[in-house]
Structure formats: C-alpha cells, structure tokens
Amino acid sequence: MKSSKGTLDYWYDRIRKNSFKRTDGSTYTSPEYEIYMSVGGKQQRFKLGTGNKEVAAEKALEIYMYNRANGAQATLEKYKQKKTVAVDDPTVGQFLEEIGRLRLIKQTTFTDYSRKFRTVVSGVFRIPADKSRCYHRGEAVKAWRNRVDSIKISDLSASRIMQWRANYLDGLEQDPIAQRRGKATVTSLLRNSKALFSPKYVKHLTFKLPQNPFDGLVIGGSTTRQYKSEVDFMSLANKAKEELYAELSDLPAIDDKQMRKSTIALNKALSKREQFKIILLCLGCGMRRSEADTLLWTNVDFKSNKIRVEATEYGDVKGASSERVIDVDATVVELLAKFKEEASGSFVIESNRKPKPSVRYHYYRCDHHFKRLIAWLHTQGITQRNAIHELRKEFGSQLTEQFGIYVASKALGHSEVTTTARSYLEKKGHKSLAIF
Image (cartoon, rainbow, N blue to C red; front, side, top):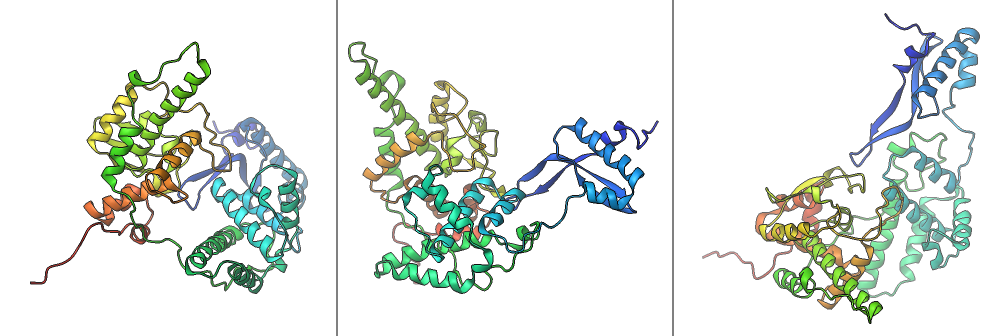
C-alpha cells in the first residue's frame, strides 16, 4: 500500500542528498538533504537544512502541507532559497567565501589558490605585509587578510594586474636566472588565481560578478622545466641503504645511566629507518610525499609486487588519475616485507603524529622524517628546495628511459602524457644514432 503525501513515510523515501563530480574526478555529496516537489505546477528544489533524515522528512512534509494551505507564492517566499543575494559589488572576501562554500575545489587546493589570489591583490593595491602572513594564526595575518578581503572585485582589472606583474619583475635582480625564477613564481600566482574565476565555478555563485579581472590576461605557458638529473640513481639508493638502513638488532640500546642521551640516539636511528622507507617509496616507486605519508600496509601487495595508491580515510590523492597501481621491483618488495614483519602500526612509515585528513592546509604526519631526509639528501648533492620530490623525478626519468613515456606517465599518475613529456625526457649518457 502506497503512503499518502500527507505522511512522513512518503517524504522519507523521497528526500535525497545531492552528489556531483568535482573537477579532480572525486565525488562530493552534500551533507544536507533536499527535496523536489511540485509547487504551482512546477518542480521546485527545496534545501532542507539538515543531515538528519527524520528531521528532513518532517521539514518536507511541513513544506507540502504549507503549500496546500497557502498556495505556491507564499510557499516559495517562505521556503525557497533565493538564487541571488543582494550583493551589488562583491569584495574579494565575499567572492572567496562563496567559491569555498560551493566545495567544487579540493579543500587544500582551494586554500592554496586563495592564498595566491590574496597575494596578487595585496601586490596590486600595495597592501604591506610581512612574513607573518604566511602563518594561519596571529593578529598580523588577520589584519592583512581583512584589508585584502575588503577590496572590491570591480576595482581589480587585468591592466592593474599586468602592471603589478611588471613591477614585480622589475624589482628582481636582472640576471637571467633570477628573472626566470621570478616569472615562474608570478605565473604560478596568476594561473592559480585565474582558476578561481573559471566559468564552471562562477556560474554557481549567488551573486553576479561585475567582471572577471583575469579576462584577456596574458599569463604565459607552463613553468614546468625538463628534469635534469644531478644524481646517480643506483649510487643514491646504495648510499641510502648503507647510511640509513639498520637492523632492529643493531639499534642503540637505552642506557639507564644516560637515559636522555641514549633515547635521543635511539630516536635518530629509528627515524633513519623511516627515512629509508621514504627512499624506497619515492625513489623506488615514484610516490608523492603525501602518498607516502599515509600509505597503509594493506595497499602493498607482496604476492604480485604492486602498490595500490588510492584515497583512504586518512588522506586523499591529488586527482582521479593519481589513483593507480605501481609495479614494484622485487628487491624493494623484499625490503618492505621485512619492515612489515617489524611494523607496530597500520602505516608503512611510522610516526607518533596522528593523520589529519580534514585539515585544509598541507599536513604531513611524517614531517619530522621528511625534514631529516631532506637534510641528508642535501649532503648527497640534491640541492633543490623540494629535495624529496627530486626522488620522484629521478624515478620518472629512469622509467622513461628504460620503458618509455607512456609507462612512466601511468606509474607517476599523470592525467595526461604531455605532463610527463614536459618533465621526464632527460636521457643519461651519450645517446646517438648511427647513419653508416
């Protein structure tokens, strides 16, 4: 027997949570229920404002009964959310708040893009800021952000942005290397800022923008440069095994007479073992720092020599293409199997810090191991600021040279093979073609 529209059961079966695909391929599901209902002869969507299904069903029934008693116009005025908000000239802060509310962009990505957009606005309007703005707490950053957020979008134009770009580059040293780095920085700031104004996001705003300040802006192409190896792949791997890897039986013991000193020595030795695991995952498997940070033992298939990179409850992946299966060399699997036997937790890399998957900034539970490994890599001739990412690049270069660009692209989790081609075509040694 079908339930009547005047009962809770009827609406309980019809309320839904809206789901849609994000640009990175992941699925977003609204935390609140909504209902489609015929009002005045047209299907109308009503947001019910709750994630509790029983409460949402009661709200849907309330709207239905009110419509029967008072008619379509009164129902829409009382329950239908307006499609537009009375914002004649939105500010930077209002724009970013609305874009963030849509949840169409991955939260850590949105935080990065917002920070870069505020940096551009700050430069255009010469709003002074010191290094304290780089921190997410403190009165200095609040004051700086409030001034930036109060700027009207209508006051920001492409010509002003281009003038700021020119002034920024003029303020740098004029040698080619400094200018190249400066152009890469400013291009990154502008490209990420412009992404916030993409039509696929702007069309969902509850107000109309006066203009897109990045329309017609000449930003420049990709700043990705072809990778040039500065290390010997095998030598680095062997050096890591020699200096970082140690059997548990070889670790320093705790001395009761020198408790503090011996504890520090043991912690350093244990950290080196974790650093060696990072070498295995980033240099031997091409994993990103964030992927290695939250990799679980359950994602390592010791029988088929594969590692499955995927989103888990502890961490997301960069994009849909980043979810992949990596073929792992048998020697690496053998070392990982030994570590698995001695593991004390579910994560491949052990750390006392807990994962924080819900934060909107870049957080690494193994950050202390990463920092120590970076210091060690600097001693091995890897001088780049993001030394750990150089391990992934070296993996990509080796894979490209030995197995081709398509194999490398798949193992690295790139969305397009052109991304791989821009970075990982470095060939080592003397390569030439005989014509006679």
